Length: 105
Image 1 (cartoon, rainbow, N blue to C red):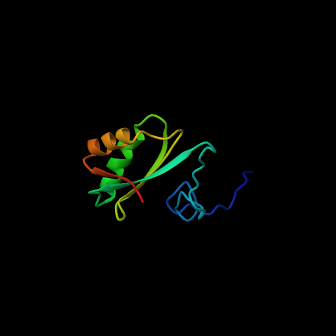
Image 2 (image 1 turned 135 degrees about the vertical axis):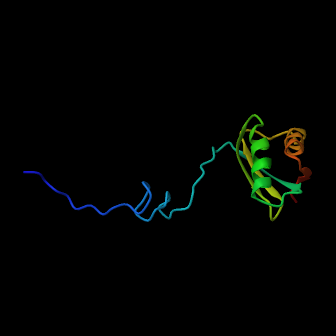
Image 3 (image 1 turned 90 degrees about the horizontal axis):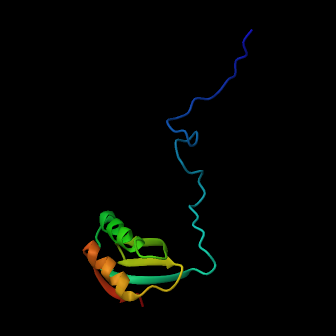
């Protein structure tokens, strides 16, 4: 004798029956209490690819814990373990092919 179980088949994802890797809760990023956040204005970003290029270069700076670039506003928010030298951020943005205008007002 074999037991049978009635299971509902997945709808295309191993993450949830709805086919999503998210359960509807907002993505949460936990920063350390001693984290420093700075917002910079970057000129020339126009799309998601631009955002990724800038984020990738800035992420390579020692101590950076997160980067969020938004092309539509030109703002890049950087969290780090300690304040960053603006020259380091400028060099990273230049390497990505964009222009750092400075800290956002």
